[in-house]
Amino acid sequence: MDATAILREARKHEKSMARFLREIVAIPSESAQERNVIAAIRAKARELGCFDRVWTDKFGNLFARIGRGKRVIAIDAHVDTVGVGDPSEWKHDPYRGKVAKGVIYGRGAGDQKGAVPAMLYAGRIVRDLKLGSPEWSLLLTFTVSEEDCDGLNWQYIVREDGLRPECVVITDSTNCRILRGQRGRMEIGVTAKGRSCHGSMPHKGDNAVYKIARVVREIEKLNERLRSDPFLGKGTITVSYVDCHTPSMCAVPDRAYIHLDRRLTRGETKASALREVRDAVRRAGVSAKVAVATYDRPTYTGLRYPTESYFPTWCAPEDAPQVRAAANAYRALFRRKPPISRWTFSTNGVSIAGMFGIPCVGFGPAAEEVAHTVNDSVPIEHLVKCAAFYAAFPRIYCDEAAAATRRGRRGA
Image (cartoon, rainbow, N blue to C red; front, top):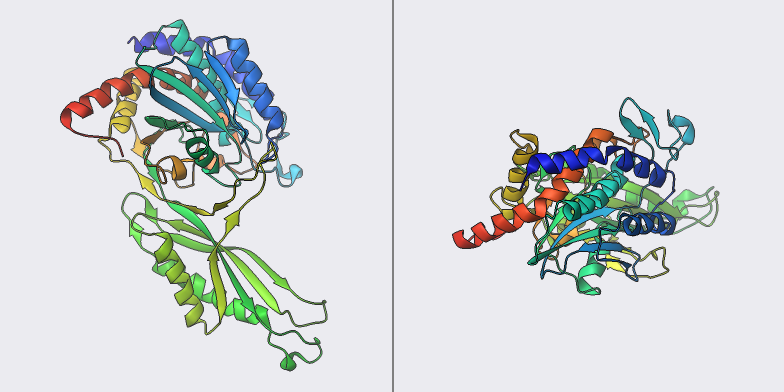
């Protein structure tokens, strides 16, 4: 495999990739509203003419495939975004795709539409340089609803579509580093009940907000005690939403609710996290219901696919075949020692690797730090690097997996 030729081809498509990224940044695509951006990506995939099949599933995910080999190597990008917040806070119009000093700005440019043109043109490079093989096929997945419920898209792909790749490259922001794991997460709801009465006589009621406030203080203390992992980092918990029910603004609330964002490091489980929150409730001296939240918002196709909001931690060993292959591809293309680390935020890997045990590795454009900010952006140079990496990875991975089999080692 000629790494120089791959990089040269990627460079040749730089302007086309930047142009298409600007086009899709200009298409609003918050979770459950991705129909138009999926249509644009589908049209581009067909225009490029390098894919053997392009299709969508009932969930709304888009797929583009090269080859018919039984060994499926997948590359995944989610195409939904968060909202823009206050538009006046943005230096550049979030839906314009402004280019300034080699960087494209706009909602989703970094998180994570930037990977989309890199993936599509990687397919073109694979076809033009004849990098494919009869033994494997390349599957590009453009997934939806990730920002709302990371990994739900892949729950559907594996369980309902029946697709289970041998390996997946996750293209969420890595700043062109190789990432091999992340903390898991879960969403926990705590509900305290009280007794309402007129606000002029609060002593006759039982204020549910005061109860939940005592729980909040214990949650803050719990965060300081959570365990840490030398690679993945510390587990965390924070209150992300507060609500109450009251008959009027002149009454004592009879119900209060907090929503908790819990990040799980290695060794923490759903059971252990729930037990810790229930212990915090007991320390607060409060009777309250503690439960894992459920997500059931329909996708843009109208499909509901309810799931418990629990997303497991995952971490691939540094000598796993997909990590070694990523490192080999990086060295061949960029002639430098590959930086290898882990994500701080969450990705579809919580399902792909965390739930289903499918080997994953991460490599994507843009820095994590710009995600969900008014500086959402990606350097155009990252599109070139990623297109080259995605084109080179499948063949290198298959060689590395074969060597790992001979050594008796599998990816995890």
